[in-house]
Length: 227
Image (cartoon, rainbow, N blue to C red; front, top):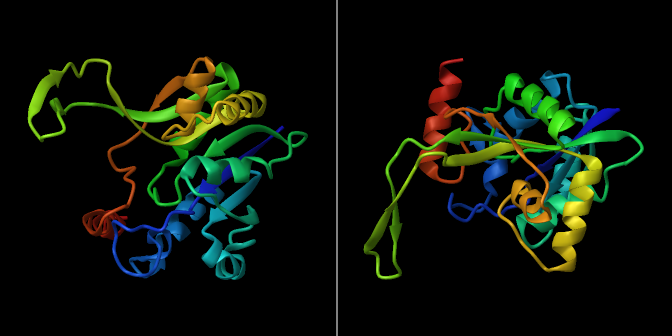
């Protein structure tokens, strides 16, 4: 059975500024999304990939990305929120062909083949797996007025990234429960948690940044220049 990847690239990127959504902005002369899709293609672990884009970018995205690289088999329109976009993509996954569904942010271009492989393998064993890194900074809880209310114990706290991978049937049931209860999570791991299934954590990397602000783009340029 194969692995189908869903790449949500449906955001408008308002924090990045400009008129071009962040996933299509240039990183060292190529769109950020180019590096993300290339990493997934080059891993040789993904059988097909469903790219989810904003409605206004659909026609351009089809021209630019459908079949480029070869694993991009479908381009579809996203929804109002990230969860809606991933669900739209999930509805296009063939349950007969895909044992594992992998979700990865379109604006995380520095994922490694090791992360992809280990997350997929863990999903096969445990049902669900997410990539994350342990928290090392001191964490403060701040009230509505901007004053510190407490210091949060950081032991056993992890910052969640993507890729995240799931057995098809488990993600299907998690979406079904979330949709019936109008529950929204910030990532698919949250949906699995809400569903009540176990989730295996795979250690990611500080380099696996999500490019959402201009300073992230500058850091990405640094990473590219070192390769």
